[in-house]
Image (cartoon, rainbow, N blue to C red; front, top):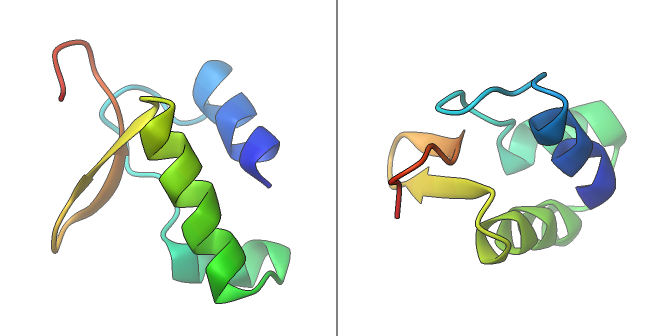
Length: 66
């Protein structure tokens, strides 16, 4: 799952500044457990690929986001 979302970020499917699927949306698309979806988001944040804005969602990191 992580590799799929990372690949979509890297290939421009999710360009910088765009919203990435929420944990709930990942559950619907991939049929995974909530904990797995949360783990994917945590890893994407840890790798500096996304930023999460409370109440807004998670977005592909743009240069200068932090």
